[in-house]
Length: 127
Image 1 (tube, rainbow, N blue to C red):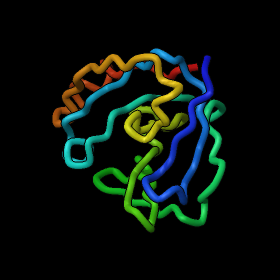
Image 2: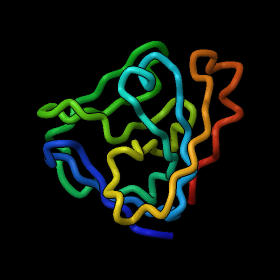
Image 3: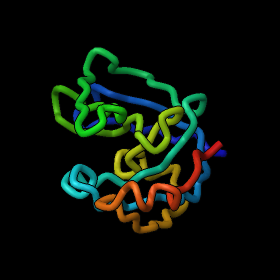
Image 4: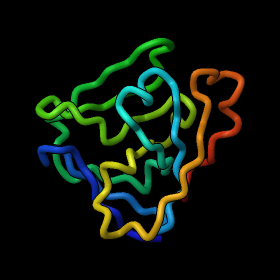
């Protein structure tokens, strides 16, 4: 396991995660992920630490309202969120990680436009 640091564009939101240096990430094509270029790394909540910026976060929900999409209210970047597929975990946007701790990224396409039919194909939470 490696400690990765990440955050939003303006630096108001900063976090750390524990995950492999070789990251297996999902590239989702659902409406929100496709528009914002989110690259998913699922981690358990115990492996996620918000270091700074709780007051800078705002939440967006849609559809079922289960997923909690956290955005920096200053720069608009969604660096992580609590996904409907993994409600006891956190999905980290790999694009928001400091690349110095990432050895490599393996991307797997995920058909989120047909989420209900395909959700079982998503990787489990990384522990």
